[in-house]
Image (cartoon, rainbow, N blue to C red; front, side):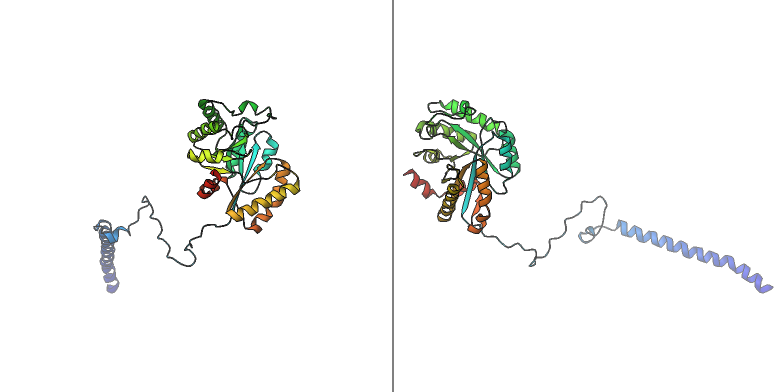
Length: 310
């Protein structure tokens, strides 16, 4: 009986011992947390502290390895062939067919046609180079009444030519250059071509000479004026028969291999589209690279220009 009374008297003391132990542990924890929070930040500890509002640092660059080191690529030395398709903008159905050509072509679009503006925008969206097909006075009568009001004519004043070109450029978006449509009279007239060169410089676009007549001054006059220019080498479909187009195509391929580049011009006929579609598989076999006409402007050998001027 006496022993049980002693235990009951000892129990309160043990409870106090446990309470003191728990309280001591709690305050020790608070002190430790305070030390961690208010310890001075050094360069070593700053990078370790995390804040949910901090901007994350970019991950470290991967170490070089055989899998992620890009090897330098050599310039493509294959012969270049640029194809310029003209007379677009006046037949929406036919124009749409040319938009689906699965190769790099340069599209020359006539101004003020029912599909001129939309054709230019769609062509640009598909990655094609877009140039303006500028109607110019021929030596013979004009067969197309639709473009006759927009002809640049021999004898026009400078302001007329500049104004006409600037309005055409504004009407057709995304044009990088211009090519003559017809123009056997205009392109062989020295003064007319000099004024046209000034207009091109104001519009800040290049020129592709379609060489619609012997003695065209496009190459010589525009080079002297400081306008980038290239001249047509082969006309694919002046005779639209398959046999004739095949001969012209072979001529362009051989010229590209010989000189390193060639410029092929064609009309936007359906027969031409069908013929080109059948010839495309041969491009890779021949080792030819199809390019926009702008690449020929950059790589036109100056010696060739001098030879043509002489």
